[in-house]
Image (cartoon, rainbow, N blue to C red; front, side):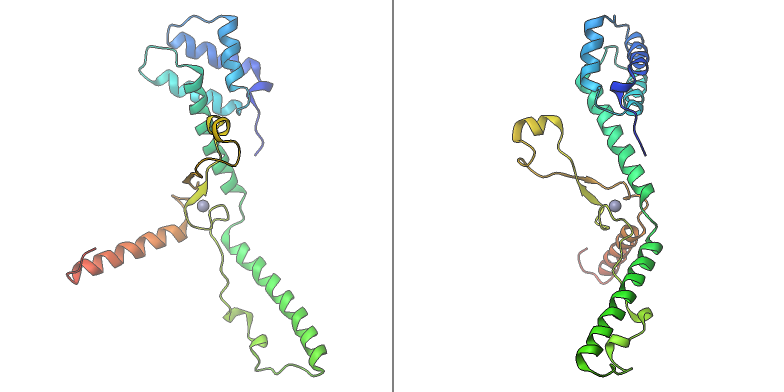
Length: 205
Ligand SMILES: [Zn+2]
């Protein structure tokens, strides 16, 4: 997914800003417009527009400050990014197939080297000749979070200013897959089942 940034779409930004300001009965002038544009210019215009629409629907009678609009748009942009990253991931089946194909090739190469080294063919009963179907490959339903449900959150501007790009506390956020990931769902189901079982046996959950 490619993003159109706010700075390349000043007309759209202006339209969103005017709608937001008039919905809150606020006056708009060049300086105010510039301040808001400067704050929001680096975000995707879709997120900026969506955030403005959300703020218009909220009951507050005041024009939200540029920081509030920025925070909203930034959060929406993050979600958009998560969703598009999920969409671009190959389904887990093809990951498994790719790993399998890779494994078969790697093993054939290894066997050839091994036989050359030994100077004789490797026995058909050897583990190296085990059918690939017997091998369980670790695969992830989600490559972003490796099925933990959490991904590291990028630092926001304020944190960057305070601690620099590598300082401060690392923070995590929910991965975009958390509601659809079958592995995570199965883990929760197993956890619930264990809990019920423990309660049934009179133990503490
Ligand atoms: Zn994930």
